[in-house]
Image (cartoon, rainbow, N blue to C red; front, side):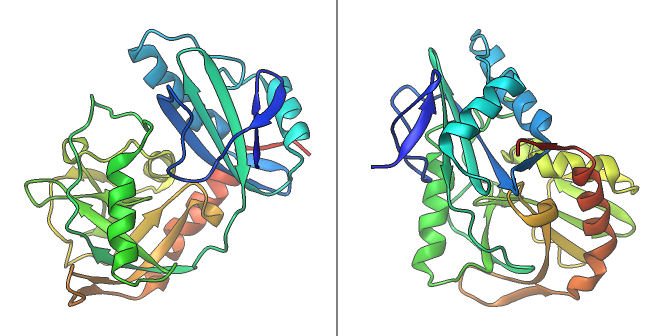
Length: 267
């Protein structure tokens, strides 16, 4: 039986995707590499925003108490993996699972699982994350491997986000991101990219960006927070867009540098 950290001790628990403790409300996932976490404050700020909407106080981990974080990581006994902090009305739970290899370049596959309507805007990263899990199940049913991310659309046919990632693209010299109205999360890596890209930013309600010069998959557990996209196929596997992943290198480098400057070591 795996263990998670609660109230200063290890207890039986499961930090795998789709498995949440009873009464879980919100969660955040972060990569732990060589005992360090990038942009912890961004994740905790999003978590506390959800708690505030429910009039709940943040516990030590959600509040960013680094002493509490060091104690938790010492008990969990890991220096690398995916950390998942889950909070509810009267608990915080921190778990650690394996960090799988990350593709340097992704392909996108359009999904038929529609993005659900948010609880409120900006939407929280809430648990259980049923809509994203349904999208992930659909993607797996298509037989796609780890290098393919599923792209979700809202009920109007506008691009929202990936099953586990945010999406962004460069078109006509501007950084385009799906509007909040599409149901996308306020992704932490996406927010960082917006701040460091050095490009005009347009929040859009858009179909597949067939004229994009570069497309990015953004996920906080990816090295540097993002990867480039080489192809985008529809739900039946037919090509919709293709491009040179190297076109995304300047943005990837800027994001990686931004995140590295905001790294906290718990080693």
